[in-house]
Image 1 (cartoon, one colour):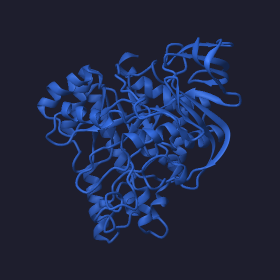
Image 2 (image 1 turned 180 degrees about the vertical axis):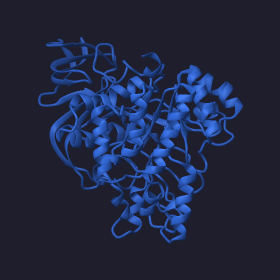
Image 3 (image 1 turned 60 degrees about the vertical axis):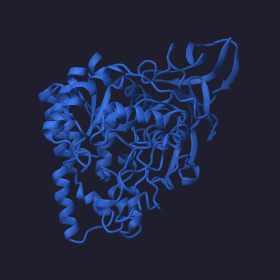
Image 4 (image 1 turned 120 degrees about the horizontal axis):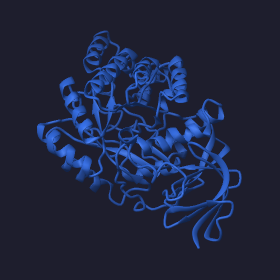
Length: 469
């Protein structure tokens, strides 16, 4: 007998849409048929859409921030919020601080996550100190152990890598077959703009966006692509914000480069005007993230890219800091200049509903494209497919049941994170996840978290499809 049968399901994958029943046993899908037979648990999906559980490939949880700043979400609250939003796998970052060994970083992050996860997880590694030991021994060993992706930064004082270091990291990635995620913004240009703005007395949160214009992102994107071409390695440009960096990505893809791109909800739902707050006041700090939201033309460009394949994945870049907190957005000095405001906004719970409503409901993308961007492509590009990211026999029974007609006004009162605000307050959406199933077990039903913190497991990963296709 089956453990669970989902009846009357409208099943939507990245390539198909059909009505059938889903049979689950021991956490996996074992049959998909017109009638899967009896089961201990019956779920009636009449009127609902059944999609693969979301995979959020870009989240920051319990990440060290330096003196006096604390991230709002740890593993428990962050994965609780993910489950509420229809996401069944998250991929946070194990951050190397200067002088740390990568193994030390990974072990500490596993300890932080242990028995605190409502959903499955797998780690990327942030490389900030690419010493000969790291490049020659630690990175290759960790890739072989299943940590097949890492992130590098082209900006931020404590994380920026220079061009020589980037080339060295890219070379190791090519040799070891690891996916590199690149935060592409030009460090020196941002420092120059920040100095100019502060000297002119332009210090409100809004000027964070002015300090990082699209040209800064465009230049860094082109430079990262050039380095990848030189070293012959696939890379992913993350959190792309507008048309100018997109054009660099499109140029490279037309030339046949193995280049991948990600965008996020803030670039389809927010603009730089949000950073103005009520009257160029500190309320704008709620929207400070990097790259910043742009303008309506940039939103239009992002939608074009989500439709035409410029973008491969749609992630949250969930990076939460409490607003009314001296260890969050209101840290000492933040009100004197935008440069001290912690960069990042919450979004792990609202990622899927925003794309569902603004994309599917408004006819900008198909439901199949939604699944590809939010589940199937992340699974493929980060070495988890077909265990994750699809509805197929043998796959993990990670499923999200959607009410495509349900209308919801996003508000902080609905959120399950530990942040004290949502940047999407008051946004009306149509389409809402009403049940989240992780490996056959319901972990969210009608907004209530039903799973426990020890249900989530760590997912060891294989090679990215960038290296196997």
